[in-house]
Length: 168
Image 1 (cartoon, rainbow, N blue to C red):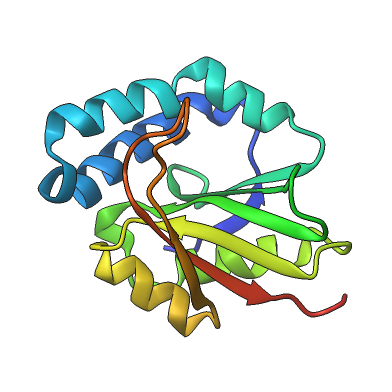
Image 2: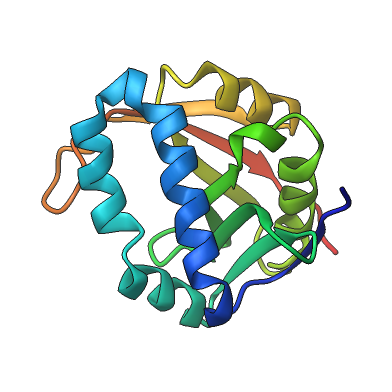
C-alpha cells in the first residue's frame, strides 16, 4: 500500500485517535502499564485536545493516508519558550505498518514545515529503544533528560533529543 502524507483535518479525527490509542498501548503498556496509558490517552488524545492541535496556527498536524486508512500521524509546533525551535510532539505509525518508511516520510515533511526553525527537539521515554534508535537514524542527538515532575506534567521521565534543521 502507498501512503501519502497530507495535512490532517477534523474529518480524520476518529481515525487519528484510534491510531494513537492503538499505538500508544502497543508502545507503552509494557513500560508504563495499561492503566497509566489509558490515563495518558484520555488526556492527550481526547477529541478536544486533537482539535486544539489541528487548529494551532504555529504547528503542523500530518497524517499518512492510503485512501482507506491512516497509517501514521505526526504533529510538531513552534516552541513558545525556545527561540527558533520546533517541538516534535507526536510521530506514531500503526504497529503493523512500522519499518515501512511511513514515519520517515512524515518526519521528512515535518522537517520542512518550519522555515524559521533552526532546531527540532523532542522528548522520548528513555526505555523506548525502538523510538530512540529511529530518531538517532534521523540525525537526532541526546542533549539531556527531564523528569517531567512540574505542575501539569506527566511525571514520566524523558530523554531529550535535538536535531539541527537545514534552511529551506
